[in-house]
Length: 174
Length: 208
Image (spheres, rainbow over the protein chains, first blue to last red):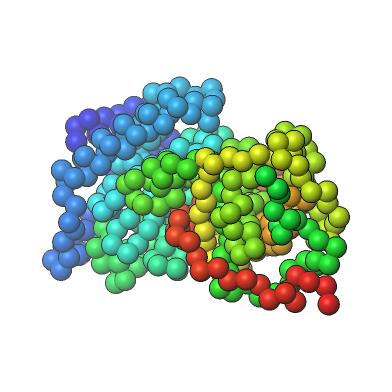
């Protein structure tokens, strides 16, 4: 965990990122607390740490094979950015999570939790409005439950709010 | 090796105008290695097998499964063949039959995935652009090509107007959202399992 917390101490993120992380962590904690009395996730904190390490290794490997997708970008900056989105997404304690880099210079996360699939795309290049952009889509079966595009901070915050609204349908997604 | 004439445009063909519920679309992968096609962690189709970097994801190519089927997935066009045949055309265009080893050859290193037409057609995605909401609707359109009459495209309608009319930064932003939507649709619904072959009634593609 110490290694992951260091991510937030670097200065390559928007100034409001610390407040976003605090807001997001509070939100996720609130959601977890709301449901822990009735639902237990099968994913433990140790599992989450292993998932984080696996994601980081996978990203580094894909990055080295697909440098052309991230032209002009420094590896360490890309890796630090990846850590931010990976860490935020792992807060939902997914059953399964993977990432793939795309030719659009994004990281495409696939997250499965019970019967919910969350697709989260974090764009690392050509950011609009000076911030990293992200788009999230949540499916339950055939139905799109949530769809949002904005800055990384906005998208994760909106995702958390949306998931809390779906808490009755998705009781353990937190 | 002869080119399969059944997939070429034909003088008696028209644009397919039938309801395609229950039909499936097929898309080629660029490898036949299952472990490269499927994301081992989640079991979903790998993003690299959804769309090649050279292709526009907002005009996404597929084929209607039926007459065009897994017998045809190994057709690979030569550079010369691509120049001649990789173009949209009228459904009834008279097309010269491609010649083996001049226009096309056999490439066994491909597989394909499938998804039902209804997973894409008329599916709406709602987004925000700044404070403004907008809707992008996916539609499945018959877009015959010289090499394959059964070629279809995923196209997108947006309430912010056609993509090509948007100013550059807005177009990029919308295209990015559309690209994401295509990826999620395919991640969620595509499968390597062969659908049951359902042929279109002849009146759907045959003139009178």
